[in-house]
Amino acid sequence: MQEAVIIDAVRTPMGRSKGGMFRNVRAENLSAALIIELLERYPELNPDEVEDVIWGCVNQTKEQGFNIARFASLLTPLPILVRLRPSTVCADHR
Image (tube, rainbow, N blue to C red):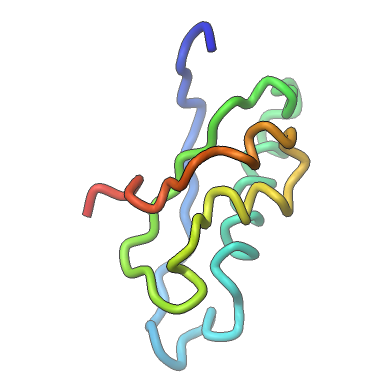
């Protein structure tokens, strides 16, 4: 990596934790949609140049207790090297 660059940020809408609008959506699917949105916003960004995905999840329960950054990346056009990074479950500062 030559230089770290943050180009943008996205997030999902807030929803109730139980019975809310995302109750049937897995965390990695919701996260992958956001990564894909960022890639679509910046078509000049070559996904092969992305070296790292840092992803936070405030309340990790059930299937959210794994490395969401890695599993979400598997559902995007990002290169395999990004998908094999160590756990980022502590990426969220809260």
